Image (tube, rainbow, N blue to C red; front, top):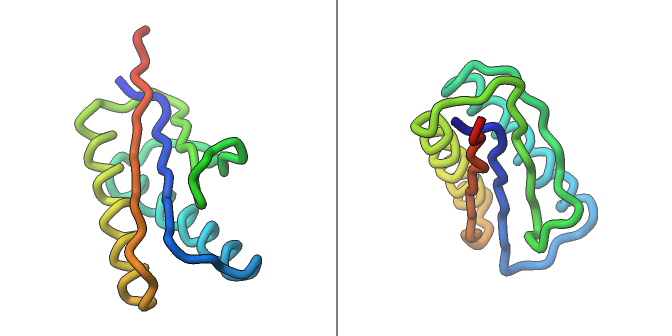
Length: 104
C-alpha cells in the first residue's frame, strides 16, 4: 500500500520565473487530473521545496492506494509531462517517480 508518491522533474534548460511557475502549475494540474482518472482517491499535493529537482510534487493520499495503482499513476504522470514538453518544443525532461510504501 502506498501513501505518498513523489514526482521529480529535472530539466536541461533555464527558465524565467514566470515559465517556472507555469511548469510547476502544469505539474500540479497533471498530477491531480491523473489521480482522478487512475485512483479517484482524495489527496493533497505539496510542491517539494527541499528537492534537488527543478520541479517536484508530493502526492499524499488520505487513504493508502494499491502498489499497482501507484505504479500506473506515476507512469501516467510521466507520459503526460513528457508529451507536454514535446508539444511545447522544450527539451525532454528526466522524470523520476518514487512511491513510499505504507507498512501498516
